[in-house]
Amino acid sequence: MKISRTPVVLIIFVICLSAVTAAAQDRGSFYVGGSFSLYDSTIIDQFTRYRRGMLIEKNTFEDEYTGQAYGFYFGYRFIDKKRVFINVQMHGNFFSKEFNVETSSSTLRRKLVCSRGIDLQPGYNITDNLFFFVNFSVERGRFQFSKEGTSTTYDVEIPVMGYGFGMGVGYHVLSCLTVRLNYQFNQYGTTEISSTVGALGRKVDVIELLPMYDNILLSVQYNFGKK
Image (cartoon, rainbow, N blue to C red; front, top):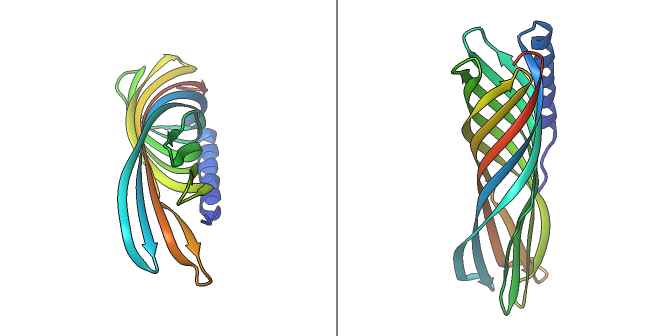
C-alpha cells in the first residue's frame, strides 16, 4: 500500500503559514501538550478461503481488546472576539497493548503501534476558564498484523489511513496551563492480506481487517501567550 505524502506536507505548510500570520496579528497563541488515554479497540476480521478459484469458506470475527496510549500534540489556537475559537494541531500517539490469541493450531496478533495526524477543533468559551470543543482528525496509523498457523501464516507491518471525530471540555487552570478531557472515535481503512499459490498467483486465503478505536483522553497543555 503506497500513500502519497504530498497532500499531508501541503496541509502542514498551510497550517504553519496561517498560524504565523495570525500570530503576527495577535489573534491567538501556540500551545504544546501531552496526553494519556484509555482505548477500547474492535478489529473486524473477515476471513475468506478459496480453492481452485472457488469460494469454500467465509467467516467474520471481531477482535476486541483494551489498552493505554501516550501522546503529544502541538498547535495554534485562533481566537475570535465572540468567545469562538479554532485549534489546529498535530499529534502523535504510542499504544501499549496488542490483541493476542493462542490456540493449539495458531497464534493471532493485532496491534496499532503508533499513529499521527492533524486535528481541527472548533470550540466555544463557556466562561473565561471553561470551554467546549469538537474534534475532527485525519490519522495515519502503523499496524502489525500476524498469524502463525498450520494453514495460514502472515506477518506484516503496514501504514493505514483513517479519520476520527469526538468532543470534549477543557479548563484553564492558569493562563499558561490547560487541562482537557475528551472522547475520540477513530476508524482506519480496510487492510487486505492475501496468500497466493501457483504460477498464476491464484488467491488461497484472504484476510480483510477493519480497525476501530474508542478513546478517552486526558491532556495537559502549556500555552504560549494568551489562553
